[in-house]
Image (cartoon, rainbow, N blue to C red; front, side, top):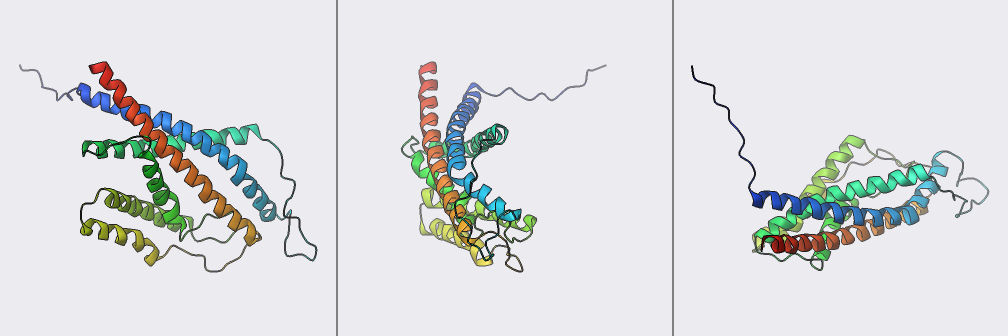
Length: 249
């Protein structure tokens, strides 16, 4: 009798393991650092606006009454559990973003493009455009209590817009002819020409000034976080590459 043969998966080569380690290490350090700073910016500038909006959502404040309402209510207070979870969630989210960015950096480096902390600034700007500015141009950041379309429809539109904008950023950066650049323009415009899901009626108890302030600060904190993420990702990617070269030399 002959023993049945088994199909064993061949072990990964040392170069593949080094590449995976380099991507993972760079993403973890870059994402954790950028996510921590972004979380602190969120807590300092964005969260107070959200807490203010919640006062109108719950009816504690009403701005359509006869009496004027203070634009600066007392919303002080530190919640260790809530703020700690916010920081942790931000760091994990940015690590996920960093994994995507560093993987794209590795592909660009294989094609002969230099990646560093300085060039990472442009990677961060591209990430901000793809994940924040492009979808937010039509589907603006919203405070609690405002009218909104169906969540599922908005998620589908947001995901499609982010994907098309990310591909467009790659074509703009690494395209070699007007066909690629023209395709990038089409990808950037198409979601907005189609249009994002909108509510049937506009309503909500939150003052428009708070919604505008929230959108502005959300964009500002997002821009800072993505620029830092790009710089950190480029720096750690370059640093890990140099370290691996020294080990193998």
